[in-house]
Amino acid sequence: MALLDHKEIQQDLKMIEENIKTLEKQYMDYFDNVISVEPKALRAQTDALIRKWWGKPIANARLRFQIQNIVQRYSIYKEKWNRQLRLKARQEREEAY
Image (cartoon, rainbow, N blue to C red; front, side, top):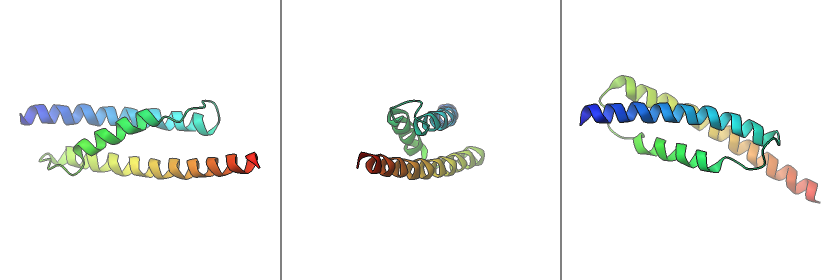
């Protein structure tokens, strides 16, 4: 069971890393008006994967360190995206008047 959890954690971490890269590209396109839809579904999937492992007791120090780094990096991106979303909404409201 521990090996399965170990493999599952590694797969989920890889998926989270890929999702963060994809989200970064998609949000850049969204804020540059290349795409018109915010990537909410992928962001929700990434949030769910992080919640799945965050705070769980993981014996492997390397995996625990990786999770902490990924969560910290993702949190920074989320703050950046939320700030840009607020700015975009404010600009759209001002343009409407």
